[in-house]
Length: 419
Image (cartoon, rainbow, N blue to C red):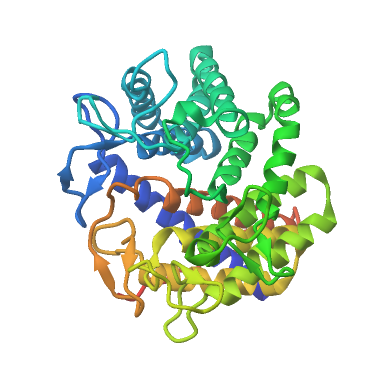
């Protein structure tokens, strides 16, 4: 027990120090003081190499700053809140392509002109998350009204009529459900329903619907989690149907686990740990070089994606959250061991002790393939969200183990990651 306590404390200290470093990187390099919002195309040392603004990442960074501001005393800082508000106002002014339509751009110029629109719901989803968190830290109802209105629009697109997304129904396109859609909606149900009985009740049925849709991605008698299935929950033919993304399955796992914990359903919790945590990890972990493969083929055929065997930052971030949450819920020491295994690999391979933040893209052997710290898809989100959630879970675990009268454990030096 004492050894476990010391190890948990060491990881809490290590994770907390890394969170401070990562937030400092984005605070220093990403803020657009002229127009509001954030630059996310940042080189290794934080230099801006492109001033385009990606709406996904604008919303994610607003959400992240607000979440840190309200959940951590050391981040309850005016500069953090002011930056989040400036990002939120930038989104309110420019994210929607043709108001009053709710469709948001994917890419904007530095001063907010639309560049590109995607025919998906994800820009709108992160816009919703940003607005809800801004309401939580400011109390300004205009943010919450915007969040709820956008949420209702997203649900309409997904469950009733997708026409507003601008995606034509071509005769050869299979009726496909990517796991990302119900996953994202389930995350929004968690976001909007937090400590809000009225919205939690409003979205109760939606949360159950999302969970059931995600669970349909467990196929072949429970042996694989597939990224895409048919709309009626069957395996699709070809590469599309065999496609697997271990990191995405793990992320879906902790989304589902939060849902099952809210539902007080121990049988579902155990099933999720087995199918969405252990199964994708054991199939997706590279036995030769360590780390999680980005993509896999369910029949062990060669995936067609050129980056299939790369090691990316976000699947490892999601795996850290998933295994620590699974251990926190079940007490199974095997899940804690897997957290340590993934976290050690992640800290040693991805973090940059010289300039801060994490590299995002490694080759199979774990060597840095791209030195950028941010880009069109990597911003201030997966890394700090992982670190913040893990710090909170480690703190809660230590609170369970440590008697109220016990003296605090001595400081344990954080280990530097090898590069």
